[in-house]
Structure formats: structure tokens, C-alpha cells
Amino acid sequence: SAVISQKPSRDICQRGTSLTIQCQVDSQVTMMFWYRQQPGQSLTLIATANQGSEATYESGFVIDKFPISRPNLTFSTLTVSNMSPEDSSIYLCSVLRDVGGYTFGSGTRLTVV
Amino acid sequence: AQRVTQPEKLLSVFKGAPVELKCNYSYSGSPELFWYVQYSRQRLQLLLRHISRESIKGFTADLNKGETSFHLKKPFAQEEDSAMYYCALRGGYQKVTFGTGTKLQVIP
Image (cartoon, rainbow over all chains, first blue to last red):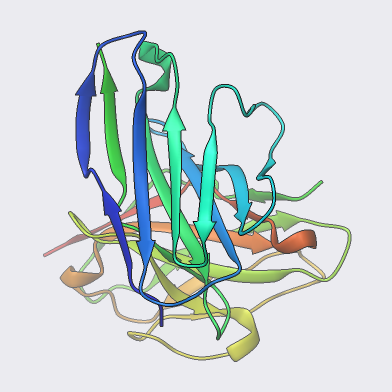
């Protein structure tokens, strides 16, 4: 199954700044998914990133706030823009496995101060 | 709309006791259901999926379409089972919805 490297693993950022999270997969995948897990809550899908096309955002998430890049079939980035304390969360990328189910990155724990 | 409900935030059981983590779902089509587990300081990982009807680490889960449930069960809990468990549903367009998770605490 796919192995995902995600970085940074954690960061503390000032409000108003932006952070870019990187996700590298060891095999080519068509779809990559970005999730957010706020403290004490479940995982919420932010967007689906397909190579060669615009990301598809879920309700409540917009491209200006969470721009996504997908330059090739093994890599994607998620940027959290103009951060506020409400953006403090764990951000995860994931890919669909061949045998079904999803493989997740180790997550990025973001704290906005 | 698709929805997953895990009614228990925390479930504490003694070692050797049976475990049942509850999951109910709402989806108009034919769902694909999963259980994910996250051990302390580890990443979220797939535990099992209903299609494969497998037993992983002694855990099983049966899809009950009549009750729209996919409860996770294990006859004898082990300390190493202590973790966060998430039920998830994949519906249309590969979209996956997660439940809020249940923390399983196995008491020695």
C-alpha cells in the first residue's frame, strides 16, 4: 500500500500568516484528499485534489483560504492562508488504497497564536 | 446526505472483557463502511472494511442494513487495543464521512 510523507509535523504560526503543508506519496495516485481534524472533533474533508485540474472543495471551504496544488501524481500541497486561531487543527492528507480504504499521512498539528 | 454516528466518546472495559464499539450510519445508496484506528502517537490507519468480511487483530464488524449499523466487536479486549476508533462511510464520488470517534480504554 502507499506510503505518505507529510510535513511539517507541527508548527506554531502567527495569525495573519500562511502555512503550506506538503504531502508526498511513494506511488502515483489519481486522487488525494485533504482533511482537517479540529480538537475533539472528527475528520472533515476539506477538498479532493486531482492532478491536472482544480481541486474540488467541500461546503464551508474555499480556495482563497485553502489553496491546493497538485503538480504531479505523487505530490500535493495545502496552504492555510491568513490564519486565525480558529484554524488551529490537525491537517491530514490521504490517498485511496488499491484494496479500498484510505492511507493517511502522519498529520500536521497547526497552532495559530 | 451521508452521516456516521458513534454515540460513545469513551468506552472503558477491563482486559479480557468483550468490546463493542457502536456505529450507525445514514446513506440512501449502498455504502462502503470502514473502521479506522489511531494508536497513541501513530497515524490513522485502516482496521477493516465491511466488504472483505475479515477479522483483524481479533476485531470483526458486520454490516446490518436493516439497523443501518456497523458495530465493531472483539470478544476479549487486550491492553494494546486501547486507541481511538473511527467509523467511516464511503458514499458517492469517493467521499468519505467519518464519525466523531470512540476512545477505547482497556483497563488492566
